[in-house]
Length: 244
Image 1 (cartoon, rainbow, N blue to C red):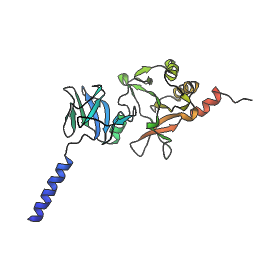
Image 2 (image 1 turned 90 degrees about the vertical axis):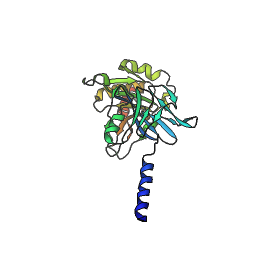
Image 3 (image 1 turned 180 degrees about the vertical axis):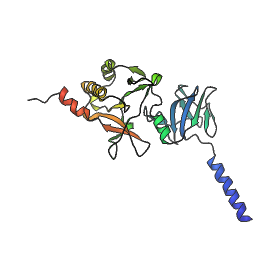
Image 4 (image 1 turned 135 degrees about the vertical axis):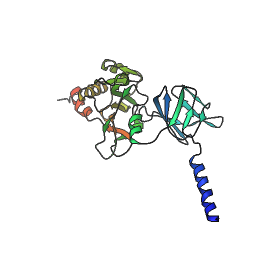
């Protein structure tokens, strides 16, 4: 009898610990039935669309409570309600706890973007750099507003752009381009000719060929990283031919 009671009490304690409300974890922001953004919270860090936009910051504490920043609310707030798997901000915005699996990983790759991107798979044993090293990112993929189209679009900052606007984007506010890590985050369906053209503009804007990368995803794990853009080596010889 004593043994049975002990086991029962232990089960209750374990169940209570498992179901204890915690704000840490992987969350999807829901607005009008659509998943709009991805958030990951730990004891010390807070990330927004980390594997698409790459944003991470230290946790903010307000009145002894973890403050949350919603991209839709556009400010830090502690005025939210936490349930086990739901965080409610208001009547129209909520976060739902997300599972860490391959499907959500692929979905998270494009959250916060105007284009849909699934990068190429990593062919080597490891990435050349982590995605967090990115300084400037050019996004290329199909527009989410019309995924039926076969053409891909270029996203610069938070707008759909054209190749003609790329020089101004690369020159505007990006001082010391030689030292910047430039990343082309392109969907695997992007034509090589477009990536080549983008890389050519990047080199013409003063970026070092050794600092130009493209994104790739691991076929073995839920991970995105950077690999060297080999096209940059081929293009530099065309743009800056060696002296004879």
